[in-house]
Image (cartoon, rainbow, N blue to C red; front, side, top):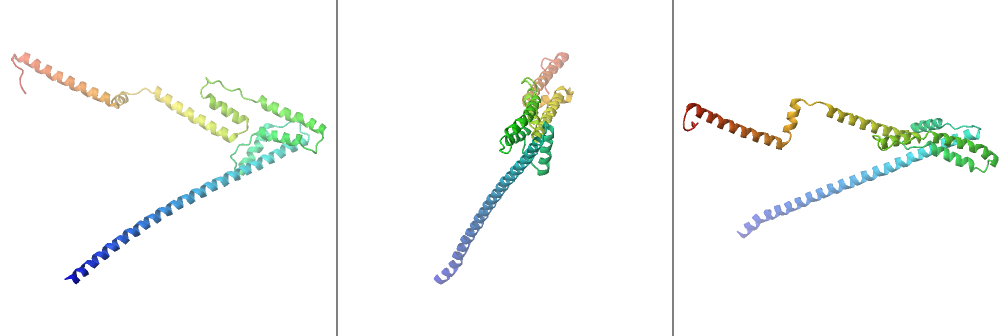
Length: 253
């Protein structure tokens, strides 16, 4: 009997051991899956961050190259004897190069001409007399640019801040930012018009009734008054029938 009991107990112990190892294996699988997921997410985040930084640095270099090329054009124009720099022409050159190079960074015209002025007036290959001849060209350019300055709207004007920002961006040649501000103004105007239509639209009786019952307190008050009115009406009808029939007591229902 002892031998038989031992034989019967051994399989039971083996099952418990295999069940324990099975649970351990599942725990290992789950832990490995979670760690693999964490590593995958971390690697993806690092790759995306690195790619974004590289794309930003590449765009910055393209914008720098565009700026230098337009500065060279301005310098050549001034040194060739031009008596006037056209802000609109310079702005078109900048925008054209930005579209070709897929650059969204702003390159203000003022910054381009200021750098060109610095390069020309600090050049060692130009005589002092030649620099004095070139100075009026830059003076006239900045005078003309200042004459185009926008008179800021007062704060009492609706959305004055957005209009002033838009004018400043246009003046500085920031066409991308100006278009974004213009779109924002258009969206705000559309929202204001929609709100105005809602206020000016005359509600129908159904709309007014629906709006009244949207509030729970109004609905409860209405049904409470309805029950009180119904009770008073029933009591009045019973009293009225009592008086007509001449009964001493109201009839029972």
